[in-house]
Image (cartoon, rainbow, N blue to C red; front, side, top):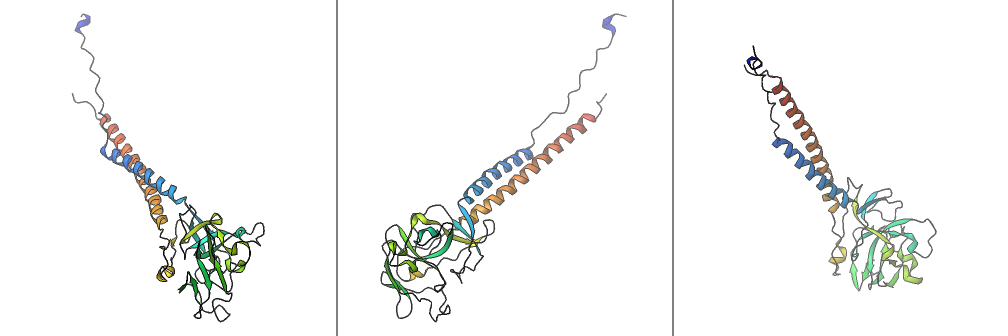
Amino acid sequence: MTETDFPAPPADRPGPKRRFSPLLLVMILLAVVGVGAGGYGFWTLLSYRMVSVPGGGMAPTIQPGTVVLYRWTPLPEIPRGAVVLMDLSAFPDASPGDGQIVKRVIGVGGDQVVCCTNDNLITVNGKPVEEPYTENDNGYGRKEYRPFSVQVPPETVFVVGDQRNNSRDSRIYVGMPGDGAVPLSKVNGVVVGLGSVLAADPFPQTTAFVEAGLPGDPVSDTGFRTSRNLAFGGAGLVAVGVIGAIVSVVRSAGKRRRAAAIPPAR
C-alpha cells in the first residue's frame, strides 16, 4: 500500500460564528447615554451648596437648624425679596470667624428704604410693601421696632431678617459707614431650596415687592431638581447598561459553548 492509499485526515470543523448581539449594542448605548446624562447632572449640581441656618433671625420662614440649598454662582443682579447667604464680615463690628448668615434683601442699589408707615410697613422708593413672611408681633407689639431711612449705595443690597425684632442685619448699622448695606462681593449665594442637594424642595419666593409695583422678577431656580434627576437617571441607565451587557456576553458565550459541544454529523 502506498502513501496515497491512506484516507485524507478530516478537515477541521469550523467553530460557531461569532455574531455581534443587537442587545449588547443597545446595552452599550444605554451605558454611554447614562454616563453623559449623569455626568452633566452631577456637574451642574456642583453650582449648588448646602448650609444649616444657625440662628432664629429668619423665623418663621426658616427655623433654626434648617438646611437650605443656595446657588453660589454669581447672579447678574439680586432681586428684592430674595433670601441670600452673606458673610458677616460685611458689617463693621464683625469679628474674625463670625461666619455667614441668611437674610432677606429688601433694597438694592439706588433704592430708598424707609421704616415705617402708619400701618407698620416698610416703603421702597415710596411704595409700601406688604410682607406676609414676617410676624406681626414678635413680642414687642409690632414687627418693626427700629425706624430707619437709607439710600442703598450702588453694588450693594440692604438685608433684614424675617424675625424683625431678633435679627442682626443692615438696620443696626444705618448711620455708620456704608449704612449697613452689604456689598455684592460679600453675598455668597441665593437660597433656592429647603433641604439637602439630593432631597431639596424649592424655596418659596416672595412676590411682595412686585405686587407693590417695584420692578424685578423673583428668583426662579429649580435647576437643582433637573440636575438631580439627570444624575440619578444617568446612574440608573449606566447600571442597566452594564448589567445588560454582562448578561448579553454571558448568554452569547454559553450559546457558543453549547454549539461547540455538539458532535459533527457523519
